[in-house]
Image 1 (spheres, helix red, strand yellow):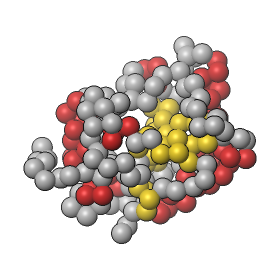
Image 2 (cartoon, helix red, strand yellow; image 1 turned 135 degrees about the horizontal axis):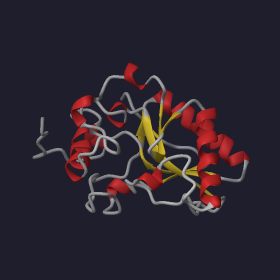
Image 3 (cartoon, one colour; image 1 turned 30 degrees about the vertical axis):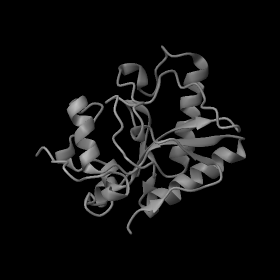
Length: 190
C-alpha cells in the first residue's frame, strides 16, 4: 500500500467526512481511517512531537481523500477558493494534504475562531476579526506545521500540504479509496 494509517501518541483522529458534520451535511466516508503518503506522515509526526512538547495534541479532520469524495465536496460547493476541482488532481487525493486543528492535553480542540469547513473569509489565516486567542491558536498551528515541513492554504486555517505536492501523482480510488469508501455505484462527474 502506498498510503499509511496515521498513528502517533499525540494525534487524535476525528474524520468529519465519516460523519454528517461537514459541508455536505452527509457522511462521505463509510470508514474512519486517516491515511497519508509516508512523506506527509513523517512531517505530521514531527508536528505532533512539537505539539506534545508544548502539552498539546493534533486532531485530524481529514487526510487522504478519494477523488469520489472530492466530487461530493465539489458538488456541494463548486468554489475553487475553498474546494479543489476534482479534475485538477487535488492535494488530498495525492495523500499529501491534511486538515487538522490543535487540542489541549485532554484532547479538547482549541478555539480557532471558526469551525472546520467554514468556507468563509473568516477562515483565512491572518484574520483580525476573530478573537485574539483564536488568532494566537491559528498562528501556533501554522508555526508547528511549517516548522515540520508543511505549507499552508491561506484561505483555510486547518489545511496543510507538502510544498512539492505536484510531485505526487493522484491516487486511484480503486486502490486506496476503497479503504475509506464503498465506491460501488459511485460515478465520477468528469
